[in-house]
Amino acid sequence: MRVLLVEDDPKLREQLARALRAADYAVDEADNGRDALYLGQEEPFDVVVLDLGLPVLDGLSVLRRWREAGRTMPVLILTARASWHEKVEGIDAGADDYLTKPFHTEELLARLRALIRRAQGMASPLLEYGGVTLDTRSGQVTVDGQPVTLTGHEYRVLEYFMHRPGALVSRTDLTEHIYAQDFDRDSNTIEVFVGRLRKKLPAGLIQTVRGMGYRLGGA
Image 1: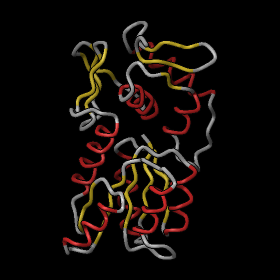
Image 2: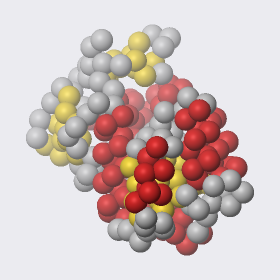
Image 3: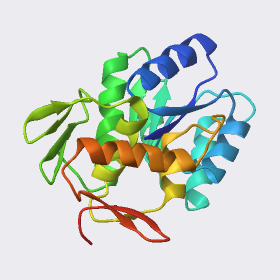
Image 4: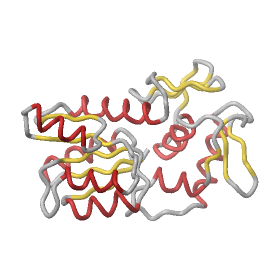
């Protein structure tokens, strides 16, 4: 899963980016509202962490412009403002959730997991399909109850599939959601990751749709 982290405090941004990458997210970063606005309009993110007190363009203005442009990715706002009416203003601008600084990183990660699940119409942190269970809280994957070891990229590919069972997923979709923008992307490696996953998962679980991409399970 790919997250846009927008925070102008370099120390906090570095801390959060490190925690997100450790949780197997592909992370893009912005330290001002102008860059955040551009990235959010041009790149496909699964979730956004957006600070409100940004230079150049404030977070609420960025969020409103995203929503006006039809961008629907879940957004968690970070604010140092404790008054309830400012939180309401953020929700009304299109935020899906908020955290008031200071906060615990584990709470932020839990809220992001919940936002991603909600965006896909899922309630449980356990994603299950065809004998495969993926626990989004711990990152543990099991097949018929037996633990399976995956690399970071393999995990991201499987997580993307598990959030979209039965849906057609193109190689472009996978490339855009498992890599950050500044990563040296190579769509050919997607075939390698899928091939490795197939060896670790039940036979036939990941299907190839010729000329279009992949599908987890049947249509």
